[in-house]
Amino acid sequence: MSALAALFARELRLSWAGGGGAAGPAAFNLAALTLAPLAIGPSAETLAAAAPGVIAFALLLSALQSAERMFGEDTADGTLELYALAGPGLALAALVKMAAFALASLWPAPLIAFFAGLAYGLSAEASFALAAGLALAAPGLVMIAGFAGALSAGLKRAGLLIALIAAPLQVPILIFASGAGRAAAEGTGLAGANLMMTAAASLLALVLAPMGAAAALKGRLE
Amino acid sequence: MRGGDTGCAHDAFGYPTLVGYVRPMTAAAPVSQPLIKASGLALSRGGRTLARGLSLAAGPGGALVLTGPNGSGKTTLLRALAGLARPEAGQITPDDRGEAIAFLGHAEGLKPSETVIATLQFWAKLHRAAPGSVEAALRAFAIAHLTERSCGHLSAGQRRRVALARVALSGRAVWLLDEPAAPLDSRGRALLAAAVARHRAGGGVVIAATHEALDWPDAEVISLASALESAA
Image 1 (cartoon, rainbow over the protein chains, first blue to last red):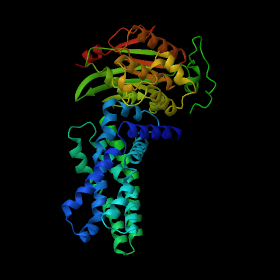
Image 2 (spheres, helix red, strand yellow):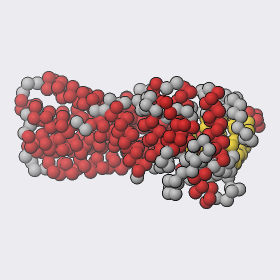
Image 3 (cartoon, helix red, strand yellow):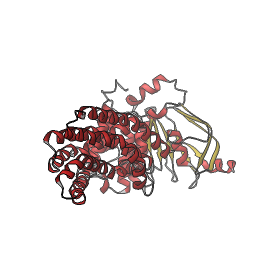
Image 4 (spheres, chains in turn yellow, cyan):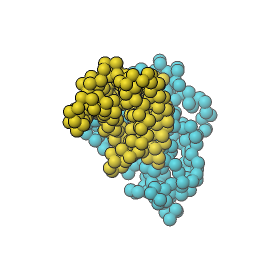
């Protein structure tokens, strides 16, 4: 346990300081949220209706944006070999690494989602449901992005491969997280159910993605 | 894992002796039993066979030096011994040796933004090293003055010393070192030889791939060039 705690602390420190932390994904997220209304048009009604989808999609893109870095550097600088021999095993190391990365890079995401929801014309209640949905979605989105990053680690044009692999797997999380915001906005009473489904999809990714990432990284080592 | 090594013994130079680190592992196995053993190995890289019929064994206190020209498979053999690569054929025992191995590859696994002291403290925690082992490793490779420097600002030789310090503080019994001395100056090589001697005296095993004469007393030399010829 203490070995995993040490690993978590190191990865958190590294992605906070060395990787620029949350600044990159947050800037990407905010830029998408600022530009989307310009493309959608000035109708307040349309904007409010599109808000949950646009805001969830902006988070998905910002989670993908830094996926290449997650395992690419470790593959190149020899850290991966050391983690493979470290004791806890690659799957646990990948889980801890991705969890630290999710926390360091996406902690502002629920806050951004809440205020973006208000700015797009959603009620405070709907904005909160959407923010909660995205808080549950963020770990799952990062896990899937990390799995894709592990599969493409060390390859040229890894970014393209990551988008192709991760995007289809992230679909359920995207649907349920934005669905929570939409259900709250429309008052259908299904916001809670959508949140539960988001959590379920995220947990599934939390279990499967580290194992997939470990298998991919092991193949990369051999 | 190593519960009883908090009261760490020190030798005449103030370094912790490695007896405390490795005792649990050597005590579990009879002295004659090798800590790592390979038999009938066939290695390949990129579909090309590098060596065939390779066998080696190293027991407590043993040292093997792998020599051979570029491309003869020294690195591939070390990676196979570490369990990072799968040999084409043959057996490496014990199967669960991952926990006993400290590996140093071509890439040192250092993060440019991390300071030397943060790096070593992380690995000490990960390996549950005895208190004081970071300081001992810093002294052993004469890098105590670099602690606050970030790894991105080190020279090649300094990086290698930090990586060797990481190996030394791991407390693991089997050191697998790929070209450990290549970027080191003469003082660094002397420090490496001393650290290797201490590790062997404590019952550890060192297997190193190298081009240069390492001047390690009674180390067994295995030439991969001849293995290559017999494979061809």
